[in-house]
Length: 564
Image (cartoon, helix red, strand yellow):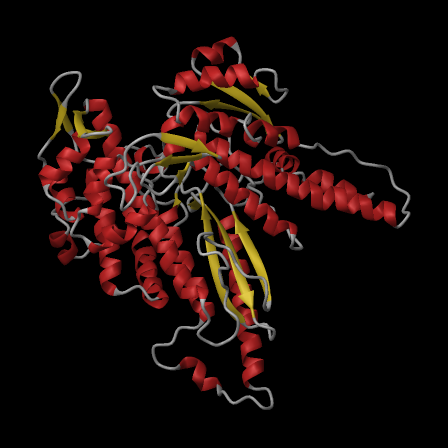
């Protein structure tokens, strides 16, 4: 699939870079010897780029129904080369990690690989230090709820864990940093086992169980502070701060938000550390540079040449589709339009320019779908952002507002039965997909409650302090006194005295537009990955499935243009 193909491409580029380096070193006038490239403790830039794969796959890939090593995030790898063809540096930008998988992995699927890998190779000292005792895979709710623990592709979790640890050493992770990340992994697992006791409809308490005590210790906070963060919320008024107790359901949501914030922050921290290692060239030459420090993944195009490798989620439609699937399919709509533009429009214009006799081939233009989703002020994402700042808004109110605004759009439909369940259908280029609006407001905000944010900020665990800046929270670092009015500006939720935080939809839309701009200034090459069957077995080819994938990807029309 896409992930395996990306690794093949990276290996090929790394091999070409080594060949170019060898030719440079042996060329007349070179003052550097080949032995200089293998000095003690030195790891080549090519090796570091390749070593990023097992690290990111461990934390960002999972077994799904269709794939045992499915990337649950998108990534764009910008690889820079010197004028002699030597790899000079690289930069990785990630898109939309599927954090909901931490809480609700799909049936017959697995959570992220790192959980299974660590527990398959955990040492006696780690069991002692991380309060694991005799805990195994099936003792953790986050892993046992799907009923699947292994992989069907024959890959060993233990070997994968060791490969990840070795890659971290090569990349430059300090041993204490690696252990700190494993400590966070265990804290997240135990957090999934924490339970609450409800007193009435308005209050509850965190049970002082082994998982809860372990979470507090692993996060470097007291049990009392952890309990307070999960069972109370702080309401800031003009003159004072008021604490309000949470009910059982709200406390569960606070626990889930803490899990997603810690894991998501750790993932972004890992990406940043990887980029620090592969960003600058230690062999000399022109490394990738970021002209704007606030724009993650921005790369200078001034020196040398670059090749971008995009490994991003494919079109998705399941029995239950939510906000994540909308963002994924929005991405595919945008990239499909790019594909149409490049293959169809440019090819046909070239035929006309050269006076070649041919019959015009029409192709579907999906701009109307993109307008439905991301058009300024009136698109679905704009409507969602607007509802996120409306006081007392709910998913149900948002859905009713969505019906009133989008009902007349040709690509949008909602039957009477769907309206009862707050669902709707979008007719995508690859077919109709039914979406449910459960938890859309919460997912679009994706903010850690202020008390939980303060809990992490006041921890004595150094790694938590470092990942704090990657955590989306109601009150960002330095905003303890943030209070007062909220405002909305271009999808940006801002709190006076705090760092403005964009909604997930607005941030993702901006990333996607930047990605499309990058593609526009390159010569794209497309690799289509086709799934021969749904049973994941060899030597079994289902023609109907293949034809459907070719049609959804616009490949059949591309062939018609080329044959015209």
